[in-house]
Length: 218
Image (cartoon, rainbow, N blue to C red; front, side):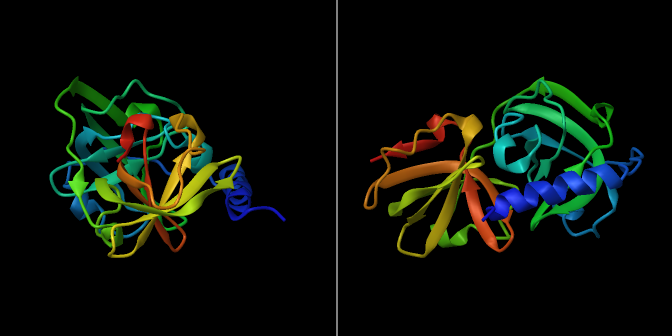
């Protein structure tokens, strides 16, 4: 039986073949938190700091986008091509608000709707309890510390997933293939400090680490 993420990929591909991209018109930039309250299909312009390297989540997001965050909130920028954006770079993006299986994303029409600025200091992750990874943190860079509660399971070809809990409740951690993270040594009871993008896939809120540096065992 095909996995849920496989069915999602097929659905995304079919939609892309029949749905032309919306035309984005540059507008005055607004806070990301404000953009997140607007209806799907709205064209907005936001600016902030890149928090994830482009393409870090390609195996499950099916694109080469990146996350952007300002002082108010964060959002994922979905792009089919990889731009030269690194965590810490400033960026201004115009795009259309879309829903990607529970995750709010911003979809530029073309690469020209993304303007990259000079690099600056990286955005520090927000400390949250494992039970606090939810809609209020979606789009942000977060950090948790807890114990692994279940052995990592395969969700190939998309990646692997496991769960951690600090006593407040489990959160799912999804490891994409592009991150180069080796989950074979992870085991229940292991204490971990995990940093990553606060995302959502259907009803599951999850943390998506960006590289091996985002997971430290204790």
